[in-house]
Image 1 (cartoon, helix red, strand yellow):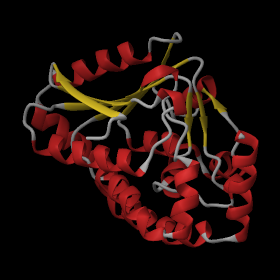
Image 2 (cartoon, helix red, strand yellow):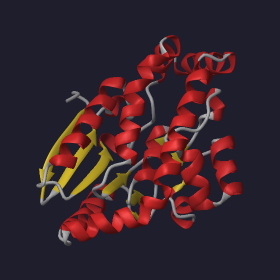
Image 3 (tube, rainbow, N blue to C red):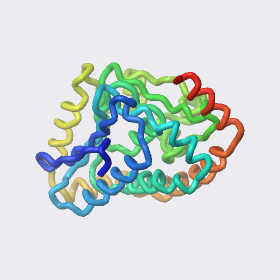
Length: 250
């Protein structure tokens, strides 16, 4: 388990917390591996009825750690850790619930598309800035987002890459319910306990019925995006975008 990912089980709910607040919970390869292993364990643990994802320190996640991405661009095979997480996330059979405060950027936003319930603070903001970084959408977002919000709105969100407010996210179906700032975890845990109290097999079968038609399409989108994403990491556009981003950070 990474120092930046914590987990515990309470009332049948596995709580997975991204705990790298000083970096706005930017996700490293070690964190991806820790999350993957935690979800694999949870899938086999009968004590776990529901899994809850949230980020400590006021932000859900600022996405991938850009400094690591610069390194991955030189060794794209390192993307295997990311792909392993996305595959287990997209195929996870138990209910997934997210509590979102602050920023959910990049993979911090696309992973929400795989959750069954998303509860967010009114101050939360989602962003999918892949094109701005010379990349392409990932985590099957090129398939899931148009299905959810329609093609034109998905194009706007994924290509322009501007922030989506919590209010708009709620209106277009990216977020189930809104709460006051600082209350997303409590609200998400409350919903998680409600789901955990229901008949386990009935819940799992209902999730499967809701998702089974899309599963093949989701996996195909993951693979197609992954291939193009690796190529884009080597592109001049991506290298220039990363260099510009890192210079601004300095």
